[in-house]
Length: 91
Image 1 (cartoon, rainbow, N blue to C red):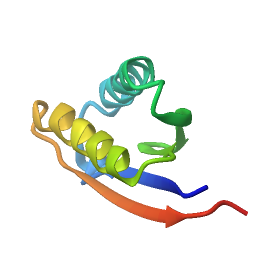
Image 2 (cartoon, rainbow, N blue to C red; image 1 turned 180 degrees about the vertical axis):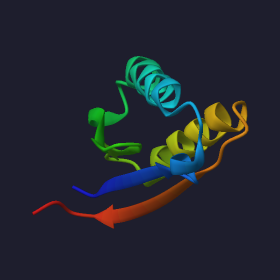
Image 3 (spheres, helix red, strand yellow; image 1 turned 180 degrees about the horizontal axis):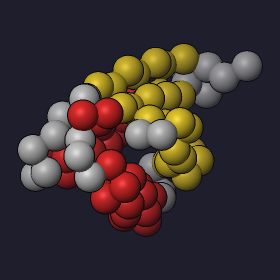
Image 4 (cartoon, rainbow, N blue to C red; image 1 turned 135 degrees about the vertical axis):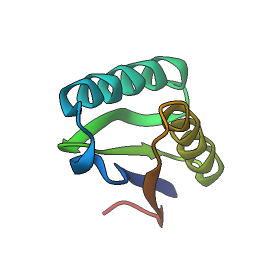
């Protein structure tokens, strides 16, 4: 089976003055996306380090859609994200 893994990070998060609020916002977004898209996620989205998180789906198209969903959520806060997407089998 082919999977798409996405790792995302908030651009310039260390310069955000209200980092604690940002962390809570990120967790809230993750909870929301986990609930709304649980059918297409191969595993729940999780925070890996600070303001970095990852998701796994068995559809590259869904990976792009979910990445855009996070972009839109953070654009509403005036923030941008970095995202790296890898596609392939799991070993």
